[in-house]
Image (cartoon, rainbow, N blue to C red; front, side, top):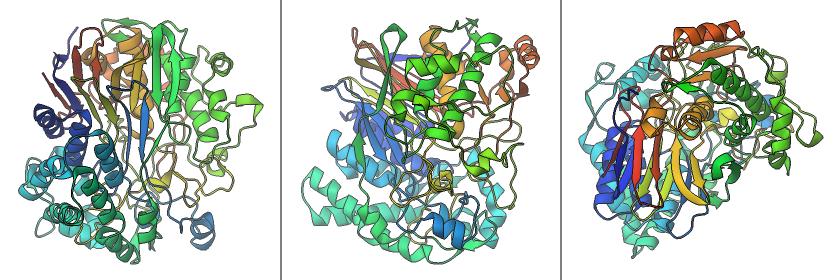
Length: 601
């Protein structure tokens, strides 16, 4: 079957990511005798520079990994919690908000990317911080070519920058307020200076690789970065509530945060497979729930294209899994609910709800006999009807355009090395369009707190110290207990739907990595968005036209509100794999958008 590029194969190392420069840097680190963790960290920092509309230093990083010495998957949580001052009383009762704004300073969680990446490097890498950070500093100081989406994003928020966020205008607009053109060389010397200062302070404070990395963590969380953040957020800035609001984060919030490790959710699947995902505080279990419901379903992929019955069943399973996400997922979830949600008995009870016709209802289940409670905004269907921006100040996260085209929202990196170390990471947050730039630092804060609800007593209610129920969802898979596959994609609510497309094509239908990524994708928008203004479209099914007219007609006959997004529009998947018997490494990356590349030998 046709593929946009070959599936790569080799024995030394493989890197796949959402930008060619990050993949090239990761490979350069592997060539310099670094391991998969060194390569992932170096690539991750480069992505903060070259895809600033999709992630940044003020964002977060969840990563799944396994080491050559220990095949058990582990989860690195570089997701910061809500600040101490982020309370429902302040947001809802004092400020009169119905939803957490999707942009601006109130949407900020504690930045977690710096501490997350450095924790991974310190504990599992071999290189110094200067070694891995040098590449990103070089691009920030000397320049990198702007991809089209950077220019488009800046153009979209240009008026907001000039009228409300002057520090962002200074950083991202050309003299005279012009928008940079695609291909123009962009620079961020303020960010390069920030990183150089962190390096200098850490090297002056300590000797030895690990000690200097720990010193750099403190220089961020207890030093000049934390001080600049606290000072800046005191000044109210416009957000998409339509008002100017000050932030609540403090330097103490940064000082209190440290990235942590946790055991991921692992689910045994047919064929000796085990899938590892982040737990109930994240979106990750939704992929497990979908696969459980489809475990006995026939999967048809004639010519590498899913048949209508497969797409229909997958879309209906997604609706059920994501309805459960709205009712049950969150950092305050009830103990024991996750085990019930991913059990085969519960999947069987949900599977019988998948009929021949598309459902137009949001139907959370009753795991363990519990009674579902939805947020008031959802239960009263105030977001039903599709994308809308009531404020005119920008959507919280422009993941999918009204046309159905994927705009991206995040980045992704997969790495495997010759020793068998494997990493899957989905960094995000701190997008240039999400929050005003902090003077002198060269970056803005994240806006992940928009995922909280302002109702009391929900699994995902806003509360100090709690993590938002993120959409970021890297994946790691084992076969017969051995790590063999790392994959993931940007895409917000679509991440665990596009990964379902990949799994069905690769694992169930036997397509290779590149064939599976290139295979026509789909997703449903029939459940509430995680992003302001939290809308959804009952019955909506977005597909790529390469699915074929006959399949699209059949899906419409089954009651789906089908939106044809064009031939190459959905997903930004990448993947790496390792055959433990032969040592063969493989990699593939998404061609959609002409950014993602795999590299390896």
